[in-house]
Length: 220
DNA sequence: GCGACAG
DNA sequence: ATCTTGTCGC
View 1 (cartoon, rainbow, N blue to C red):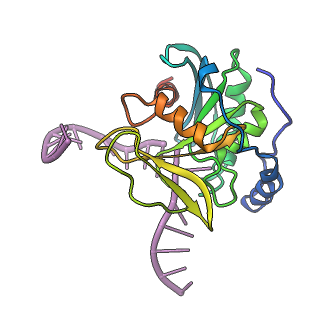
View 2: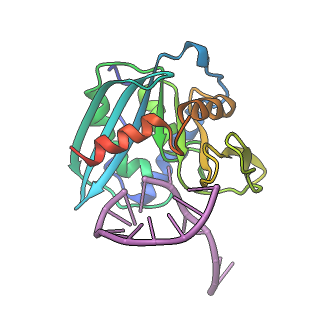
View 3: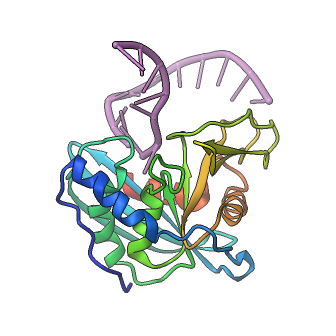
């Protein structure tokens, strides 16, 4: 697929923070997604083993999640894990996988945070700028912010706030399971993100495209 | 100084 | 993320 401007990846953690502050203003998080018009959704995930990062992007139909395409890439893990700087660890290998993608999905779902980030630019926002296609974030854990306890039924949701600002939501995609932390990426707003993630996780805690990407990344 | 901290 | 079998609970 066609891609936007080149990102700077070969930098130190300190420079990475400066890069995030430089890019944060470009992110758009107030645009509604037309769920009725979505036909293809992609799940994005990266697995790391023995300092080798493997990325997988799986495109599936929506809303029945039939696999359409899987793009993978592999390379030495280039950056340490630093909370808040995940894009610089997973971005490089993801770029490679994205460049091999033939289909252009209507939206990408990332395994990690988006706007729910100390500087409001998690991996879903950052890669969204590069992709130029709507992205949303679905994290299994909370990076920052706080929220009230989430109701026990599927669909229950509580807004996550940080420094007086709404940055995401804790969403119960399945009863009896811990909620997932969703937030806008780029070119999508929080309300649309919540609706999309719920529609993508009809049976299990994690969205189907993410489950597919997770399998693809850890088994090739 | 102390606690929190996506994957 | 990853190391890892069986096991408790809805």
